Image 1 (cartoon, rainbow, N blue to C red):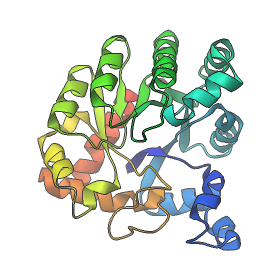
Image 2: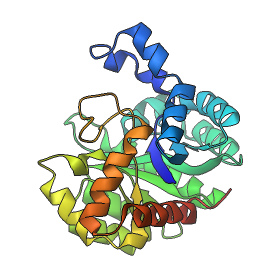
Image 3: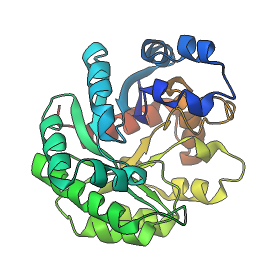
Image 4: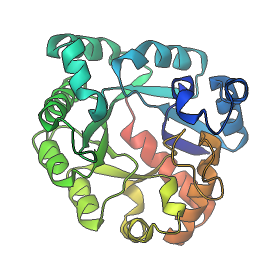
Length: 273
């Protein structure tokens, strides 16, 4: 059965973001955690990894994995939240919280962490400081990492090279072949999401065709980036089947073989439980 290696199941946090598409009552009815997981299981998804992006996610994701055994979680600080976390918590408290929460059986990685230079006003120093801190904690805890990198390929590779004892996955990969090859040389998997199904994703499909199957993962990044034919909708783990069929076609292998290989890759990386 399929594995969604990256989703955000605490979707109520995104309710305001999607307010123009779905009214609040409908959103609450359709996008409860239990409803999302039930639809995913019906679609053939056996395991979901719900991703933390800030420390305030910790209690909510802990509750999700407590009540849903098919879900694992990560804990981490997304680069967009780097500066606010340094201001609110400070380095010592951040480290203390991640070390405490990272030792539970349901926590299988540190993430989503990384660099995001997409906007002009980002604090690159804060992002780099938080990234290195979390890479150090991942090595200390013996956990893999989930890396976010947008418009920051060179600095991301440089940071990962500074922590050779850490392995992980490049989440929702959107770079070119050279970036993918550099990441794989450092021991990282490449995870592909819904944009591979988009008409204009020519470069991404070229990357996917070049990837070795034993380094490939698949994800939704739900509730964002719904694949064709669901594009424009609120994404969820059940939609991962569309992405899986597209990648299987690109790799010229059967859907069943694709599911088996990517699931084995997932358990090979996230094998701490």
